[in-house]
Structure formats: structure tokens, C-alpha cells
Amino acid sequence: MTRLWQLGATLVLFTGLAGCGVAVDQRALQTTAAPPPQASPVETAPEPVPETAPETPSVTVTAGQAATLETSASGESESEQPVTDAPSPEIAGSQVDSGVAAAENDETVEIASLAPSAATSIDDLVKFTKPPETRTPPETEAPAETPAETPAETLAETSATPQSGAGAGEPADDADATGDVVGDIIWNLEAANRARPAPPPAPQIPVGPDPSLASDALEAAFAQIARREHALPDDVFVLPAKAQGMTRIALLIPVTGPNAALGAELQNGAELALFSVRNPKIELLVLDTHGDGPEAAASQAVVAKADIIVGPLFSDAVVSARRIASQANIPMLALSNNLQIAGRGSWLLGYVPEQQVDALLGYALTSGRNRVGIIAEDAPFGQILARHAVDRLAQFGLRPEELLTLTSTMLADEDQLKSAIRNFTGYQPPAEDETAPAFADLPPSRFDALLFAGSADFALRTAPVLAYYDADPERVLYLGNGQWNQQRILTEPSLQGGVFASRPTGRDEAFTALWSDVWESRPGALARLSFDAMAMATVLTGQQRQLWQASLESESGFSGFSGAYRLLPGGGNQRAFELRQIKGGVSDVLQPAPDKI
Image (tube, rainbow, N blue to C red):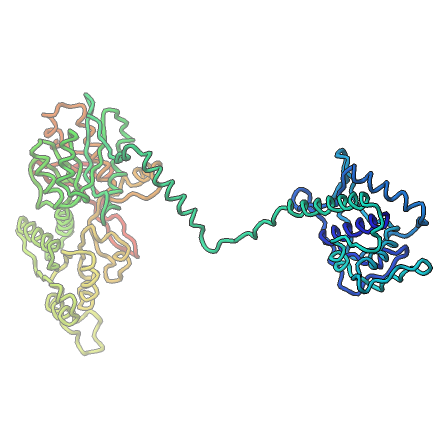
């Protein structure tokens, strides 16, 4: 009975250890250490991670089964010699998991190792596993030799069913009890294996963009649209109603478009005047003449109940806006310089080029140059200047000595240009006598003053040819308009000594200092115009409306940063100009402008 119990216990332990991944070698059950088997050892189980890796199931028996085992083993221990001081069995690959703790309070006993005395029962187990035909009765004198090697897997399979034959003479109740113990142990092992959780599936890494993100974003967008009850209102500026006693000035300028830079300069000048006057009863309303047109801008000024309009800048815009403003009886201070569009109810504030011609001709005549020639560009601007010069000379009882009009075709063709200018100047080739003085044979010039009626480009194109045909500034006084006040004209060699009319510059330093306190850029000529227009409009705020026209057309005029001027009843103006002469790439004041008209 004792041997049968030991055989069962050994079988259970082998089966449990094999199920737990522990390889057992019979030779390791001897009292002395033996070398490991030739078969490849099972790899050492990795150290478990707490609370993550499943624990290796342990073989347990109940308290009742442990008592039965102790009772059965007590008889055998008396007949067998115990092995003491034996080294620990070295089982290949049987490293015990250090993370498995012993049972504490559940009255169970964990089987941690095999008893050394169980090795002697293996011999009997081998005998019982033989078939009845080949089995031989045991001899008392010589016990059966232990087979050289019996694999643990074969041992476990053959011992699963109890054998009948030798050893059947043991009491039946002890065999049944031992079978129950073995059955319970096997059941516990199988239950532990079944309770082991299945390994988690391997994580799958998605390839490409996560479609859930796009879905979430789309759902969030729909949710936001659903929560929106009303559409956002447009950011439209609503002009407040004009307060009692306020004077509203509408500034009509090109805020957008290709001339927006000019409009910005005009607006800065008007705002600077508003800051300087510091009149709380004046409001400035800026309206764009480019977006919806000058008529729409003028209509907005009427709706806003503007008291006076400053602008527009260009001639066509002035004509369009004036039709709307005159119907509402709103006076207009236009920034144009075109006398052709002057009319009642509006006044021009620009630097009129015809007045520049008057100043130039007056200087030439007073300096004794009565023979005046005119070279004109076949363009509206050039023709206006040429006609005005002829009319002004006629008032003095004079007529131009020569008048040449050059078309764009003639200006583009070098031969035509030279031929026309040669005839215009009356050029004669010098004598072939080399001993004669340089100017001895030069005939006198047909004119002693020459008016350039055209743009700056026109002067740059014709001046070198005129100098080539002996009509240079050393013999003829060149007269030019305000467009000559630019660097490319001042540095042209053939124009050195020429004289041109310019706006007054006597108060430029004061205006530049005032401008620099507010704006970072340098002021231009238009900035002075808008500043003076705003300053003049503020003068009207303390007067009754029916007196405005008389105040604007006062004979005493006004003196501002743009110079001295007065507004004429017909819609024009009269301005003072200074004359400047080109010398060495710069211009110097030849004749200053008067302070009053």
C-alpha cells in the first residue's frame, strides 16, 4: 500500500511539473547530483511581472488528503533508511517561480519538491507497468534492477490506470483512498490549467490615417452647426446721426485702387489739420471715390448730412460728385487743378499750371526777353499750356516767335525729331574756317526764351536735341512747369540753367516738423492741400451757412502751408508761385513767392 501511494504521488508530481513547463529527469531523483540529460533543456521561465503575468499553477492537496498521505508514509518511513544531508536535486529547467507565495490561511499544503525516498518506488512502478505475459514474479533475494532510463512522458502515460496483478494483495480500502487522493490532485491540476486566462490577442497597429478622427471632426462640426441658432451679423459700419451744433466734413478721396497712396496722403493731411485745430464741433467722414464711384460717395455724404465736401482729386470725379452735391446745396472744395471743370458751387484748390505759365512769362518779359518761343507736346496738357501762353502774350501785345508741336510719332522717330527741331531753331552749320572763333559765325537765336509746354518726359526728350542745334540754356532761357521739380530733371545736363515754377516752399520746415510729430513718412504737395482745405473749412463752423460763400471768396484770401491763395467766384483760384533755377543738379530759389495775393 505504501509503495502504491508513493507511486501515485510521484506520478502526480511528474504530471504536474510537466504541465507547468518543468522537465524532470529520473536521474535527478538520486541522492547525489547527476549531470543533466542530453536533451535540450527547457528554457528558464522569465521572471513574472507583478499583477500582469499569470501565475504558474501549483499542485495543492486538502488537509484531509495531507493527513492520509502522512499516515501512509509513516509505515514506510519505519522500514526504509532515510537519506540525510543529501544535496538538493538538480532538475534541468526546474527553476521555481519566486513570485508564487505559499498558502497562508486556507489549510492547504503546496507540494514544492519530491521526497528523496520516493526514488525507490520507481523500481516497483516499472515492474507493475509490464504486461502480464512478460511479468515475472518478484524475487525476495534479488530485487529487480532499475531500468537505465525511462522517459517521464512514458511514465506518466502508463501509470494513469491502476494495474491488477502483483500487489493486488493490499487492502481494497487503502487502494481506493489512494486513488481518491490521486484523482483529486489530477482534478486540481486540470482545473488550474482551465482557469488560466487565455493570452490577450496581439495588438494590431493601424496603417494610414485613423478614420475615426475624421468622423469625430465631422460630427463635431455638425453639432456646432446645429447649436448655432442665428447667422453672425455682417460687420457693417452704421454712421451715427449728426448731433446738434456739429459740423460734418466729408473727405472724398481714392481710398482703394491704383491711387490709394495719394488718397492716404490726403487723408493724413486732413486728419493732421483736425488734430491741430482741436475743434470738438467738427467731424471728419472719409468716403472712397474708387469703390462705388464718386457719385455714390457724394450720395453717402448727402445721406450723412455733411455740411461741406473736401475733394475729389481728379477732374472726372469732381464733375460727377458735384452734380450730387449741388442738388443738396453742399459746397465743395475740390482738390483738382483743372480750370476746365471750374463751376459755381465748387472751388478748385490745386496748383493750376496756367498760373505757372503766367509767372514764367512775367519773369521773362520783365528781364527783357521778349522773343518767346514755344515747343509743345501734342497732348491735352501740352496744348492747354501752349494755348494759354499764346493768349497771355497777346494780352501784352506779343506773339510767339516760333511755335512747334511735336506728335508722339515725331518724338519716337529720331530723324523726324532732329529735322523738326533744326527747322524750329533755324540752325545753320558753322563755317569751315578753323581759324574763326567758336561763336563768330553763329547767327543770333530766333528766341531768347523758350517755353516747354508739356510733361517732364517731353522736356527730357527734346532738350538734348535743342542743345545740339545751338538752342542750349546758355543762349536761351528755358522755362518749365512744376513737373520739373524732380531729380531726373535736375540732373539732366541739357537742362542746367533752366527756370521752373514751383509751389511756395517758405513754410516747408514748419509743416514737416508738424507732420513728423504724427506721421512717420515725409509729406508731399497734396498733404498741404488737404491740410489747408480742412483748416479753411473749420473757419466756417462759427458762421451762419448763408455767409459761407462770401467768406470763401474773400478778397484777402488765405495763407496756408500750400502758400497764399484766394478762391474766385467762378470756381477757380489764384495762387502765388515761386521760381527756381537748376544749377549743379539742384534747384535754388530764383524768385520767392509773395505772402499774399
